[in-house]
Each structure stands twice: as C-alpha cells, then as structure tokens.
Image (cartoon, rainbow, N blue to C red; front, side, top):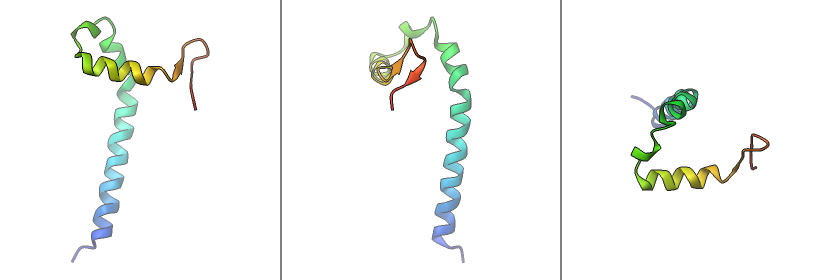
Length: 64
C-alpha cells in the first residue's frame, strides 16, 4: 500500500521539475513574443505589465 505523503512528495518534486523547465524556457518564450504582442489578449498584456512594474530597466534588477 502506498503512503499518501510519499505520493504528495513525488507530486511536489514533479511540480518543481515542471517549474524549472518553464523557467529555463522563459527567455526563449519572451524572444518569440517580441514583435507579436499585438496578438496577445489584453488580459495577458495587463498581467505582464503588472509584473514588469517590479523590474527596473535601468539597473536590470527586480524589486525585492
């Protein structure tokens, strides 16, 4: 019989792997989107703009 906590730990480990894979592809996805943002829904654009408020383009750093 499988332990529920072992299943939960395995699911969390898999989630971390998926997040790491997404993080490693984020730069490539941003490169693909450049010049094509007019085709992105306004909802997604609002969310991106909200997140980018925490980025200082002059220093190249994110707010804490």
